[in-house]
Length: 294
Ligand code: C5P
Image (cartoon, rainbow, N blue to C red; front, side, top):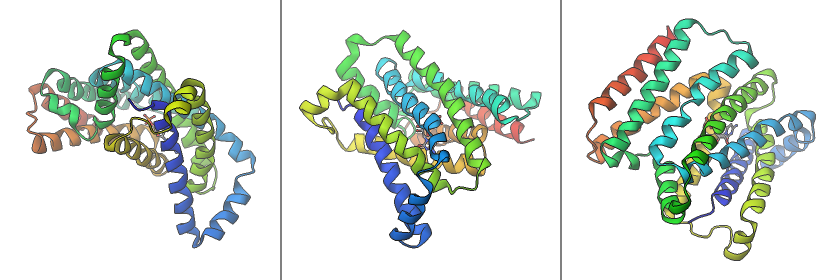
């Protein structure tokens, strides 16, 4: 089994490298990017990023803990609670007003995604191999192989619910910072990534320090592990684009629709036969999006 804490650290490093490269492209040269970073990094604004990056580090580690203790479907369904926690924090922290219709559509979204995902457990197992479920499936497989006898449902559910609350808070905090200042999104991500890397390094050393010392950072890695880590890193960067140009609540809609889409791709490519529950769930997700946009 690969070390989850090492996977989180490599993901943070990849995001950091991608942002520095992006900044160099944006500014026209590496020297210009370095100048911008030297001006922007030693600032109070950078310190503000301790909060979301610390939370994301805890959240990402909690999610791996959850995956090691739960099956992929339970994990994914329970994590959808973040749709409601995000809405709640949007009201509390960003002063957004949500009409009754919008709250109803968010609850519908939660129910719809849950229906789409539970059918993967009850119905065709191929769903667990869809693109969206790749993270869950790979980690679950690894966890089942390595830690099945010590799995604890209570630990798993507690971890995923805590992660859902943190997801809502960190998403809204990051949205507030991104929208309140003119600082470029890439610089913001570098600021976030510096702390993210530091926190992930500390988390790795405290939980798996001895294992890393003995077996190396990338012990147990294979092509699937790289796929998961790259997917998470790219997904993380995409999150900041969505939060900047749309908002944290719409991010929830985007990821719910991606779950439905990847299940449809699975139906075409992996001979997964959608059940009635899936079709109803997918319809509810789409209807929720429509209602929210009214
Ligand atoms: O599940 P949720 O939508 O809260 O996940 C957000 C993910 O996006 C986290 O894994 C976090 O590390 C990542 N993220 C990121 N860069 C940002 C904002 C979020 O990598 N600027």
